[in-house]
Length: 304
Ligand code: SF4
Image 1: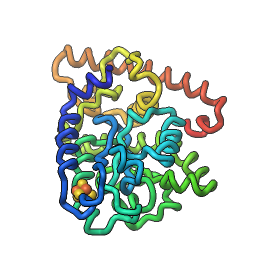
Image 2: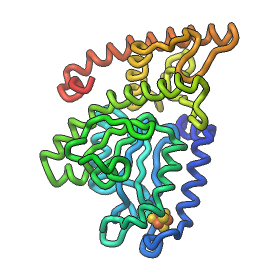
Image 3: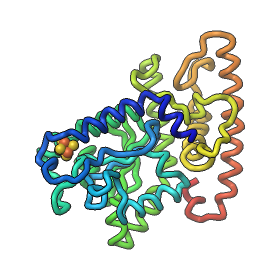
């Protein structure tokens, strides 16, 4: 319910809805003739993590939703292991219509369709993009090889990327499954890198970044009161909050009245900023407590 309300208030959701409608009526390439449904993407309009696959398969073509088959269920498991929820992230593909017989999309089809993905990235403005599989990685950084890049963190075109093997590869190959299960736990470091990059961009410009969504799930701009709603308990907000608290601690803004996203101008704003900083410190302490609890889980302990 809370998530639905925030969607309504967020202009990003309106922009995404317009894009979805445009994709639904798109006939720019031959894939329109054979698709059953377009698969534009789904998830939070304010997601800090965006997964990008190559294109829809049969199940996605039937439902109009990305990653809903066996590979999608495995992706859900990977996301849940962080811990995080599917609805906290955004999942999209490079091409929005299924290529017949699951063939690779042709270059012309990718060229025709990829502007939709560029728009989605611009609207959502995630901290981290996770290309899934070699084809998706090739669209972002063709010089990289997926098996060598799995779980590693890159900067590219003012974005942080953390490629992963395609989940379907993990279903076929036990070694790839292990690599995916380990690699996804590097997302916290990738989020940290995303925050550092955003901070650097801000420091370079010293003006708010045009088009950046209001980071309502972000403790750097959140209300001073820690969020306790069911919609925000656990999952991505915890991972992102921890990363942001660490980033704030290690790279404080040069001007103490300036945070990464906004500049307090009045005494009231400065007082609110101090209150917010205290809330961040409390959140950091809570994150440390949670990290200690997670030590019992080897996989999560290695992540934190
Ligand atoms: S694949 Fe993309 S460009 Fe081609 S018809 Fe579908 S939405 Fe349009």
